[in-house]
Length: 359
Image 1 (cartoon, rainbow, N blue to C red):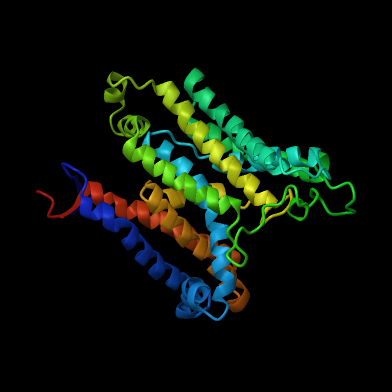
Image 2: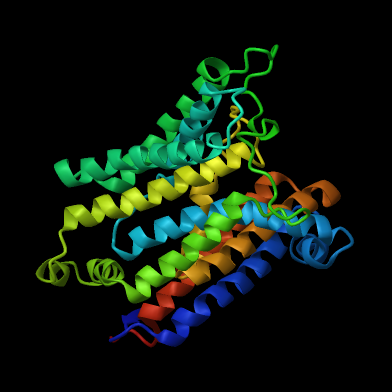
């Protein structure tokens, strides 16, 4: 009989090895999936992980890595603070969308105005939009005890409908004929989020993501708020004795996560995406959950995990275009990372025991 026996204390070795083991298992399972789809698994994995970094067109793909990683790192860092405190915000995708809508609407309200204050104003509005959307499940949790997992997740679908209505209605480009979507913000100098260093892909969102990672690391390791986050997640009763007010912790964690997700949406709509469109929702808010756990809920780990996940996006597009792999297969491959990470994490808290059943 195979059974799991809880460890007296989590294994540090398994905790550290879990991300590496999960990546290896994902490569094996992904290779089998690609083979079942009729694609050479070695060629598929090479197209995803090797070619974007060391291949012939690596100079192009490397810039795309930063573009893809920035929103993932921003969102995942905010989510990780909440997850460490036992606050489960699953609705970052909705906060990302609403932040983009709020920032884009603010910029389009002053469209054609030429002032350097437009872009900072849009960033502020994107931040506040994501924060306000995050406050809905937070207040429902604090005031009525509603499950924040369900409420934050359901609000994603509300945000997607707001996005659709904006693309075809109140933010639609009045000069466009037959194409739903807003004006192109990336082509308007006052609202554009251009590359800061030509050829690198690094825009203001990339710089902000790096600064947020550093700030989060300092908070978790050097600030009282970091201690309160840790104790809230590990020992809620002890946190109350230490003076932590649970409701305030919920509001703080949701507020930070929502603000960062909103900024990520704003940087995306003024940069790579360029405009509000029906298909603007890219799933970054959900993928960021994988990034947060793959990075062990540590800011520096999230930075590395964000680059790895960005590599699967960029390499996945490369494999889809050159090898004919379906996009759904790439999404399934990304999902395997979280599946195997959670599976291997069990070994950090439990030992596997094999023995005979007593007669």
